[in-house]
Image 1 (tube, each protein chain N blue to C red):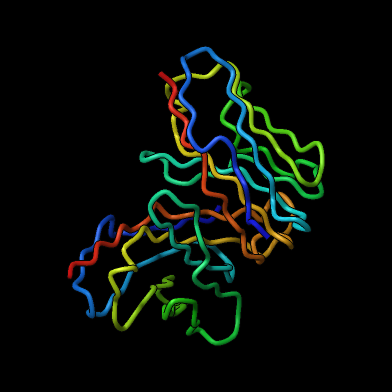
Image 2: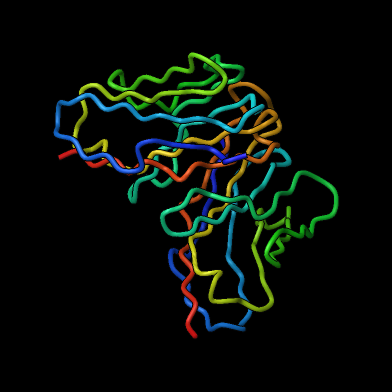
Length: 116
Length: 115
C-alpha cells in the first residue's frame, strides 16, 4: 500500500522568503502525486498534481513541485511567500488503478506560518 | 456552481445519540467521497461512491457508521450511536472523473463534537 510522509509538522517563514515543503512517498510504481492546501475552517483545495511527463509541475498561486523518482520525493516550492499563504499543506499519493485500488492517501500535513 | 455543500457546519451531540451529516456534491460530478480529519490520524478516506453506488467502504471505522447516496445530488453519513472518539471534522468531496487522477473538490466540512 502507498504511504506519504511529511516530515515537517510546522514551518515558519518570513514574508518574501522562499519556501520548500517536503514530501516523501512510498509506492512501487509511478505514483499520482498531489499537493492540497487547507485554509483555516475550509476544505482542501488542489494546488497541483503530477501524473507523468515533465517532473517540474506548476500550480496555482505561484507554487511548483518537483518529482524526483530517485528520492521518492515531491517537494513543494514557492520563491516568495505571501502572508496569505499561511495555511496547512497536504501531500497525497494515489495509484493509477481504478475502483477500489484508486484511493488517495494523504500525509499528515505541514502547517505554514508566515511572519511579517 | 456553489461548490460542495455540507450541513450542518457544526454539530454538538451527546454520546449515544444519532448523528447525520449531509452533503450535496457539485452538479455533474460522478464521484463522492467522505473523509474524516483528526489530529491523531490526519485525513482518512471513509467511503466513496461512483454514480451513487458505494465502491470502497473499507475506511468506515465500524458498524456504527453508515453512508448512503440515494441520488446524484445528495449523500448522508450517519453515526449511530455516536461516541466521543467520533469527534472530528468530516469532509465531503466530489470529482468529475475517477480517482485518483481527477481533482477532488472539498466541502467546508462538518465539525462534530460528541460529549
